[in-house]
Amino acid sequence: MHIPTLKYQSQSVSKPYFIAAMALFAGQIIFGITLGLQYVVGDLFFPYIPFNVARMVHTNLLIVWLLFGFMGAAYYMVPEESETELHSTLLAKVLFWVFLVAGALTIVGYLTVPYAKLAELTGNDLLQTMGREFLEQPLPTKVGIVVVALGFLYNISMTVLKGRKTAISLVLLMGLWGLALMFLFSFVNPHNLVRDKMYWWFVVHLWVEGVWELILGSLLAYVLVKTTGVDREVIDKWLYVIIAFALMTGILGTGHHFYFIGLPGYWHWIGSIFSAMEPIPFFMMTVFAFNMVQRRRREHPNQAAVLWAVGTAVLGFLGAGLWGFIHTLSAVNYYTHGSQITAAHGHLAFYGAYVLVVITLISYAMPTLRGRIANSTKAQAAEMWSFWIMSIGMAVMVLALTGAGILQVWLQRIPETNAMGFMATQDQLTIFYWVRIAGGVIFLVGQLLYFTSFFIGGDPVTEESRAGATGRRPLGAA
Image (cartoon, rainbow, N blue to C red):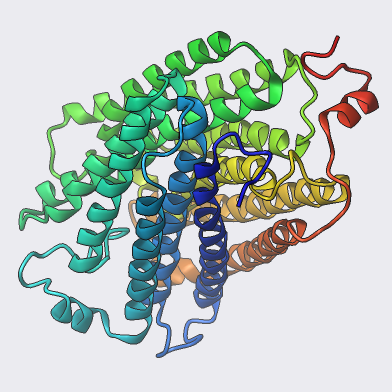
């Protein structure tokens, strides 16, 4: 079917990826609230959904839905950036169903089969890859992820090679290839615990504080190019500087995970210095977003997408930058490592940097996939309210976890004598955990409002009507 607002019809393959991403996002939040309740009601849903299973589902859904979002974003962006149709729409559709079915079966396996039995049934004795946080997937699922990733990268790379090469598409391609290559370390699970943790961090850290930041930068730059009308050359220069700092600080910043796992002491210095510099690219991203919006040469009708883009830059800086910095120095991390402060940083960093940038792209792309430039004023208002409600809910959760982490360190880790035991400390944190649950419920309300915005009708906003309302001329007007 021809969709008049799409420049290239193969961009339409991104739509099912976006829908799947949002559905899995909802599942992730529901399991997150379940986990929060299990902190204060220990036997909730036991033995049907024990805590370790709910946590696996929560974290695995996060990874899978973000990957769906990245893939959908690439399928939407790359044809337009390359000025050519996607290399193979059929391959994109087949890989979608392979990935969705494999992911669904994995989640069902977590929920219905004891984890040890699942490992036995899926060939973990042939190649031991299971049992590590975030990488709990059975061997067939991991192999399936590699197959899907290779097919996806082939499709995207061939499209870029046959078309125009832009800074945005090349940075995106570099990030996506890095994502796939780093995941290969998930197949390496040595018996030496130090080497095991090193390879584990090569996946987890070099994803979220390395190559994923390239994907983040390219997605944000693309939306700002489209919504502000600022010259591409200006945005490209910002993008190059941001990713250079992100790679330099992110790669060497891996050292902050090497502090206390058996590696040489010089990692205390390397990890501390370069981790302390990791907020710089995120701060630059914030300045970049505000600068581009202030210098805009057009009033794009999709102002909801602009809000999500600016929110990505600000909350990414707060979560990945500021909340990461407060416990990244080795002398501080000695006390805070693995505490609820880590959980606070992780939640805000993922939400600010990656959840929001995927929603930014979906907010920009989905109206065009439905045959319009932008949604109606009412639909965009609902979207904007959902941004604020989700962000407030996340703020409540993060502040509660930060308070819980500070008290946890104070009671359990700082005293040299008479330190409180782990479970006794947890009892003192109950009020913070209840507040965290309240934040999670607020977040879920915002998420449901975001989903509702897709079903709100009304006349789509046009560039002319938006420009008339603000007194600006549309880009290219006489």
